[in-house]
Structures are given as C-alpha cells and as structure tokens.
Image (cartoon, rainbow, N blue to C red; front, side, top):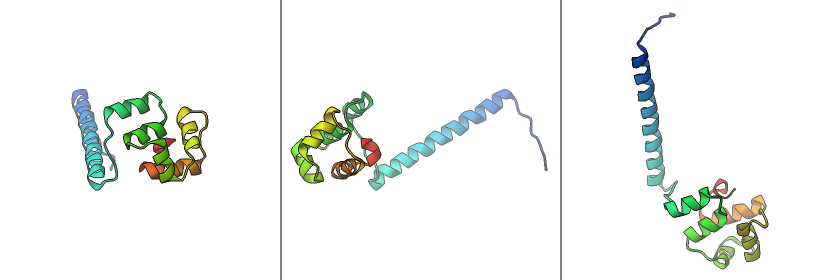
Length: 113
C-alpha cells in the first residue's frame, strides 16, 4: 500500500508547472462563467487603478455608474452630505449605510469596505 515512485527533478518541476497551469485555467473558467452569468463585471483600468491607488470606493463606483452624489443619495436613501463625507474620508460610514450604498451601486459590501 505504501508504493513509491521516483521521478527526476526535471519531471517533478514539469508536473508542478502543469498543475499551476491547470489552476490558472480553472480560475479563468470560473471568471468567464461569473461574467456570463452576470455575477461579475469588468471594470475599466481607469477605475481599477483609482481603487488600487486608495481612492474612495464609493466615489469610484459612483462615477463608474455615472451617478452624482444626489442621484446616489436618492437611490440609496443615504443623505448626500453623508456620502460626501464618506467619499472625502472624513467619515467611514456604518455597515448599514455602506450596505445601502452597495445596493444602490450594484456592488458587494466587500467592494466598498
């Protein structure tokens, strides 16, 4: 039951590389399926770079959706001044507030937190 197989280091490294390639292919397939099902969306590099740079996710997603603060306020039920404070970093926003904003922006709470 304790059978062993000996292979060369080169063959072992080839197998590891093949396993990594297979994992990459599976991740790609999952991402394509999520896009096709409408569970995920592509974000243009301009907006992704702003998020990476640390800009307020509320502002980035609001502008990506083409909304003003007033329109987001009306869609979410969150006061416009509160949205401005969250976007500027003066306030963080409660979980309830961020949930409302996430719902209005069509993103997950994790996307805003």
